[in-house]
Structure formats: C-alpha cells, structure tokens
Amino acid sequence: MKENLFDEFSPVSKEEWIQLIIKDLKGKDFEKTVMSRTKDDLRISPFYNHDDSKDTLWLRDFRHLVNPPSGIPGLPPRIWSNVFANDASDERQGNKEILLALQNGADALRLDLSGDEDLDILLQEVEVQYIQLFVCPKGDPVLVLKQLFSWVEKKQIDPNHLNGGILWDGFTRVLIKKSDKNKVIQQAVILMDQASGFPNFKTLAIDSSHYHNSGASTVQELSYALAGFIELMDGLTSAGLPPEEIIGKTMIWTAIGSDYFLEIAKVKSIRILFHQLVGLYGSGLALVDIFIYSETSLWTKTNMDIHSNMIRNTVESMAAVLGGCNALQVIPHDVVSVGGNSFSKRMACNISNIIKDECYLDKVLDPVAGSYFLENMINQLFDAVQSQLEQIESQGGWWNLYESCEIQKQVKEKRAQSMNSILSKEKIKIGVNKYLINDEMSREKITEPIEKENFQLLPTRESMSVENLKNHEA
Image (cartoon, rainbow, N blue to C red; front, top):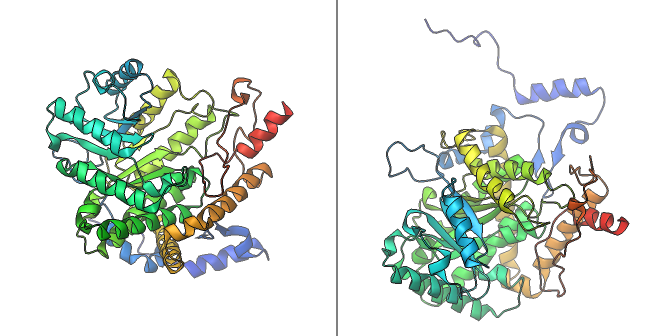
C-alpha cells in the first residue's frame, strides 16, 4: 500500500518561513542580513519554495531542451563536445598535440588561424569529418575560411560532414581594432556566401565572451552581445540575405565565470533570449538547434596561485554543462603565466572527461530543470536583459553606443568595481587576497593588454589590481 508520509504535515507558505526567520534574527533587518544582490542588482533570497514558481511558470516550456537526441543508439542523453584548442603557431608540434588530445578524450578542435598555415601538416591524420572543427581567425576571417574550405575540397571531404563553425563576431572585433561598420557587414556577407555549401558549419557567432573577459556584468555581456546581433541582422537583411538563413548559420559564444549558479542561469538565459529574439524575425528555429560554444573564463584566472585556477576551471565547466552548452573549451590553468604546457593542456581536456565519465553529468538531459532558485534567476536575467536591449535600441543601437564609447565606458566601470572589490577584500579570491602562498613561479611578471584608445575594450583579469600591487612590492 502506498502512503504519503507528508499528508499529516500542513503546507508552509514562504511568508510563514520569512516570519520565522525574522523572529530568529532578533531585530536585525531581514533584507540587509540574509538577502543578497548580484552586480546587476538581481535579488537572491536565502531560500526558495513553490511560492516562487508563480512568476516562472512560463519557463516550463524551456526545460530539457539543450541538445538534439543522438543519432547513435546507446549514447547518453546529454551531449557536448570536448574542445582542444591549438594556436597553430607551429604546425608540426600542433599536429602532435592535436592527435594526442583526440586520443585522450577530445572530440572537437579549436584552431586559431591566420590563413597562411599549412593545414596538410597541422591536420595530418586528423579525420575532421568525425569531429567538430572550430576556427578562430587571428586576422581576416574571409582568408581563413577560404583556406579551410579549399583544404576540405582538396581532401575530398563531404561538405555535409564538416561540423563546427568560425568563432568570429565582427562587432566585438572592432572593440580591439577599429573598423568601419560597412566593412564588418560586408565581411559577414562574404562569409555567408563562402559557407553556403557547408550546411553544418556555422559562419557567424554572437560573442558574449569578449564582454565577460573584459569585466562586464552578466546583464551587460548578454545585452551587448545580442544588441550586436540585432545590428548585424539589420545589415545582412538590408544586403538581401534571408533572416532564416542568417539565423541558421549563427551560434552563441560564451565565457563562463566562477559564480556557479548565476553562470548556469546565464547559459540557460541566453538560449531562451536568442530563441525569443529570432522569433521576432519569423524564425522557427528550435531551442535544441541553438548551438552554444562555451569556454572557461580568462577574467577569473590569476597568476598568483595558478593551481587554484584548476578549481575555477572545474566549477566553470560544470556550470557550462548544467547550463546547456553544446561545446566546452577549458583553457589551461596556467594560461596567464606560461601560456599552457603539456600538463595543463591535458588537465584542461580531462576536466570535461571527468564531469562526463565520473560525475555522470551526461546521464541526465537537464538536471537543474525546475529549480526554484535557478528559474527565479533566469526570470530576473531575462527581464533585465530585455529592458537593457530596449534601452540600447532607443539610444540608436549597438554601433551608435560603440562610436560614442558608451559601451566601453559602462563595461570599464563594472570592471573597476570588480577589481576594487578584490583589492579591498570585499570579495574573497583564494590565492589572491586570501590564503596566499609564496610561490616564485606564480609571481612571474607578465605583460597584460592595456587599452590605449577610447574605442578599445580588451580582455583582462579581475585579480590584476592585486597582482600589480604584489609585483610592485616584489
């Protein structure tokens, strides 16, 4: 006989719990004592229950929709690619590293290309039709894709079997090197034409990672990235490209920070936001067909205690997977000191393997579906980003704010707040301002990018303020 053991207990409302907490606080202010807020002023309660689901019922339609079912019987339901990155500066050495990574769990590659590499050497014995291949242009994206597609044609690889995409967002690139809006649009038009015969290769990316690694808040990175896409859509549709074709060739590129639950909510939010946005263009794109490429954060890494970066990489990787990423690149934990060695690259590759094969995060499609806390965060993020997007459009759009340096100004303000919170110990960062170790290697002075022009917005790290102080003291 089945018996519900909880029937004899009367349900307790959230208000009743709050009154009990207030009583236990003995006069202390409830809001100031137990409530917290994010950098974007998103409200975080100390607890959540069924009462909190009243405003998030609409999110039920977005649960369990993170990737298409596998075409191979027997595979777990949750699928993501383990991306190994190589800068292709030395083709022969790069080939050795690529083959070793593919033999040890990687099933996708990211190649940073300039367009003059010898792909016959770099990709020797690599069966690209059985993996995902992502290319990140060091310079001209048109030249890089021309080189890649010529190599694919020479190798007689079926264009339908080239899976992956190009990690290029023309609007974030102008935050590094100044360019003309028409040139960015024209490059995108050419890329779309080049890749027209490769149906499974994405040719446009919505890059929120650049804003994240430059110090932006969560709402800023999502808002500015999507606002840039709106600007791109306007340019491409004016050039005669159908919206459905543009949307089908677009993927999302994110960087994942160490604020675990907020980052899970961020990845889930950007999938929903993009789905809702493209629906305004009449697109019927399914949620599971939205491709999200995630990489662990450069912004959160430090060179003061590089081994603590392995923990950050693990937390960020789990957040990316639970949030619903479709490809995961883990940057080496020593990337800010020595640029990554054989050990750190292997560890980076292994993190994705471990959370799949030992933590079993691939066994459940959407483990966090229905979480009162996370769906509340997603709901707040969605509203905040939507409001910010409306404000951006009312001010003339992304390009207008870029030219007036308003985007750069707003992000730099958030960056300064974050750096100062580390310096003042308002925010604790292990190995940086708490539990420091005396490790000469981790105190190695490195050259960091510094914005020399007002139009620039460059990646950096939140611990730089403390590291600069330590380097000065040393």
